[in-house]
Length: 182
Image (cartoon, rainbow, N blue to C red; front, side, top):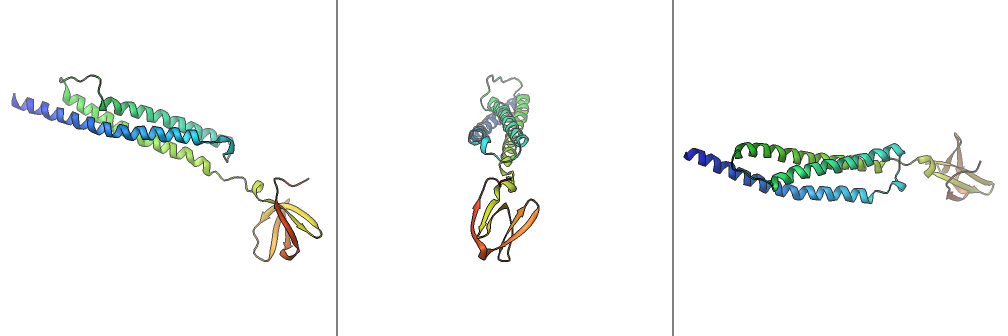
């Protein structure tokens, strides 16, 4: 009889430790949910670089991260604050509870990973051809094209696939433009 009582006491101690751990993780999960919400609120799709499918994928990943985080939070909260506690089957409940807690913690990390993956869409490179268009003015006229690298005392432009070098001493002005005429 004494060994049964000792086992039951050990199981109750394990259950209490599990609940304390779950309550700590629950706070972390609420922070993760807040982080996911903040990422969604700060996202401005209008200024986002990259093709539309990248933005749609990022939005889908954030929504998936939110769902995964909610499921994880429910799993951990159910173990942190159990609705019904019975003394019968405490050992079985403890093993199941540890499994739920582990799964909830793992899903929390999955949610963070999905959110991080979704934010990588903001690093999509902008179209270089649109950013580097300039008009180079000289005494003879002006040229409009994509600015190229140059290190020999000239300004190099790509004019519809043809590279043109203008000596720096002939340049009277360089102005970025949104597009070239014609």
